Length: 135
Ligand code: 5GP
Ligand code: ZN
Image 1 (cartoon, rainbow, N blue to C red):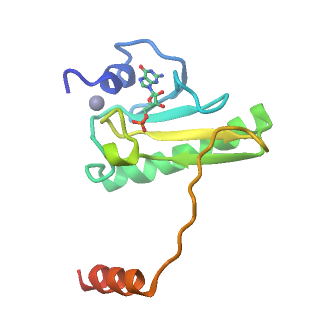
Image 2 (image 1 turned 30 degrees about the horizontal axis):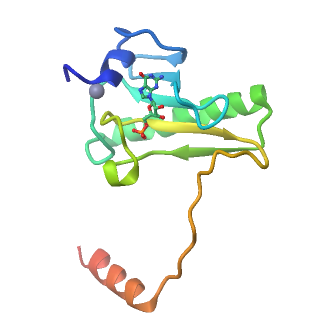
């Protein structure tokens, strides 16, 4: 992907604050952090989103997320962690190269990763179960 900024960062063609690197991934600090220590896991190969991601890479990414947040939690002494992964513009994705956000949280911070809970209606429940389980 010639014009993909995360391809360039992941491959080291553009410098970044790198926390971790191996053959498959680079983990960098986000330039627009939701909180201090906000990091991104980038696969070095280009996949636009989770739908394109090979199972093996998905599995490795989650294991790596666990390692990074476990270490970072001790360093930052934060109270919690959000692992966020956006797919599609409607979901807030702005860079179309798969990435996972690792966002440290402290009690009462303003990171604001939240939603207003609705109600699961019986119509929605039945419709979704029927359609999903039919496939
Ligand atoms: P998305 O909205 O696609 O889930 O997340 C994109 C993230 O990438 C944002 O949090 C944004 O701050 C971060 N970002 C965008 N461009 C760069 C960059 O050039 N370097 C780094 N380190 N982060 C970036
Ligand atoms: Zn890319």
